[in-house]
Image (cartoon, rainbow, N blue to C red; front, side, top):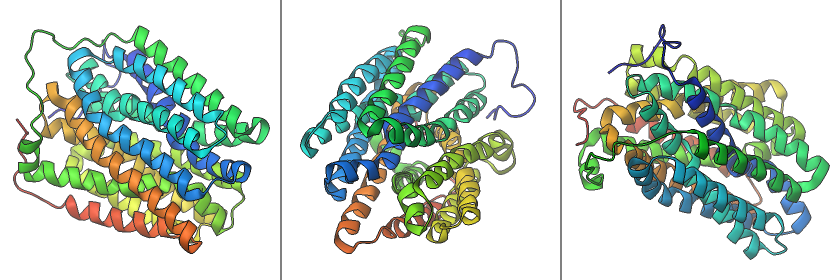
Length: 398
């Protein structure tokens, strides 16, 4: 397949504005809750005295429900395009996160956070924006995905330090309101501007999950995606608390987490060349190795230079994983079912990612240690590397 690499990135007709706008959707959808929560966790705990296990369980519930909803959301854009998805995400996230921001009890906070976080995850994450980008550039899918994920890499870069800055000045409640207002605005603009109309005349059969699971490469990919989701989901919530536990000031840890987002670009700019040299499967395996090694460094990340190793290595791996997931999925699945297929991948990634923070939060309440987060993430990363071992049968799922 055409990897979209190298020399034709500025070819006539490439929809730069559409891809950039999809990048802004991605940045905002991930940033307003998924990334910001890790920064706001400590301030919320200090202000409300709610149990940490309850807060992390709320985050995990939002991730789990968002993951489950990713499959019907993917089918929605396969049939109707992205406009309805973006409009729904804007409305539900504004209501949900707005409610959470004014909550005076954990149950009310949980209801709002789950509604808002799940709507952003199911209707604004990469399984939506990558599938939309591929339809916008059907002749250069890898290029479209690579460009989109370069924009998306700046989500944590922007939102982690921004959330930290705003929280110190206006408090966690106003910070949630400010971040969500910006996200809703971006989603509304995308809904109005992006013309994403699938071929209404073509009859699309629903994605056969049983057929997917009977394909060894697809099955391994689903398992690997879930395992890496467990590791990444754990670390993205706990990277700031882990670095502060190791000895870094909160502001420094937040900036390091943001720098990891910058480092993600190092895994995305060369992705087409890496795929051309290694193939999509081996490229994903390399990215998973980098995540596993980089996360292990967090054990001793109490000094800036050590934290920078985490930033560089884990940033490369996490950055490369996002476009590679889409590129490999485009090899395995029919394109008119790509939204649903990536929804299934997103479901596995999200459900497993939801489990990690819950386990670490409960273990922290019970044992008083957050280092379980590193152990869980490293073990999951090693398992994902193993799942992507060579397999001779690489057939597109039909």
